Image (cartoon, rainbow, N blue to C red; front, top):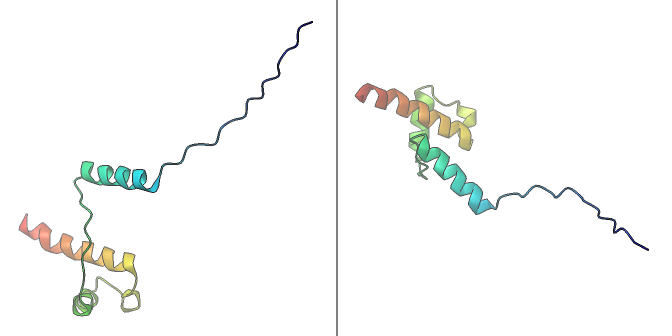
Length: 83
């Protein structure tokens, strides 16, 4: 008498990387692209200048991404002239 063992194979859930691993992956990706991630502080008056130069809409002055994009545009305009 032989008994066959029934083996149940269930697909395993994909392994999700830890937050630290994701940060490191993003860091390496930025470095390969020649970018650096920095934290800076802007004065309200500097944000006012971004608005005056037409790079930022007044109602978006508190939006992190809007301010970041406006600052990128400003740096692109000013630094590209120096190159």
